[in-house]
Amino acid sequence: MNRESSIKNQEVSDNNKRGAVSLGTVIVLGTVILEIGVASAILVFLLTSGGYGGRLSQSAYAAAEAGMHDVLLRIARNKTFSCSGSDCGNLVVDFTNSASVDVLFMRDTPAFNQHTVIATGHAFSRNRRLEAILEVDDVTGIVHVLEIKETTVLP
Image (cartoon, rainbow, N blue to C red; front, side):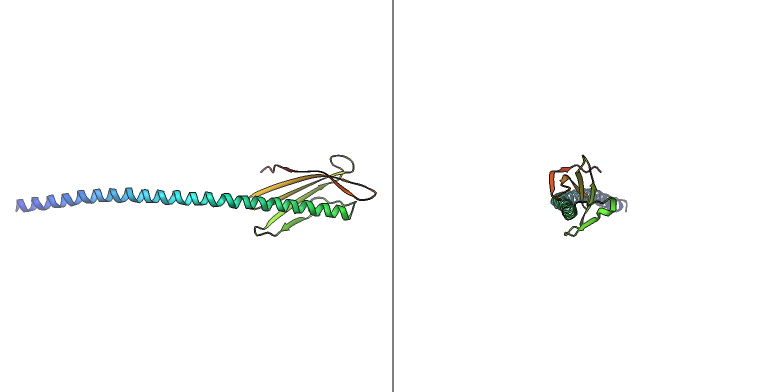
């Protein structure tokens, strides 16, 4: 009986060794497959977010441009146009991304009879800002755009 039990113990021991090796192999293969999956997900995210971010940035720029043109039109219609804060209005330019714009109008800045318009377009996490310096003729009401430039939007 001793011999039979010794053979059985040896078979059980061999099975345990094979099971331990199989478990290690399964863990290593599972880890490799998981790493490939995570790397693929990150790669897809980075590739798609780059193009989407560019579209959002263009929508924010278009919103800022629309706000700028809106104020220019208001000034052309009314040479004594004035607004402050929320009086200038927050335009909601409804593109597919729901972009919006905040407009700030400063009369007689940087000099007398020159006005500054700052329009900041927003599209989710992207912001673009346009600044214009205008000169309005008091008699005729003609608006001369002296300068339009894009400036940095600080977070």
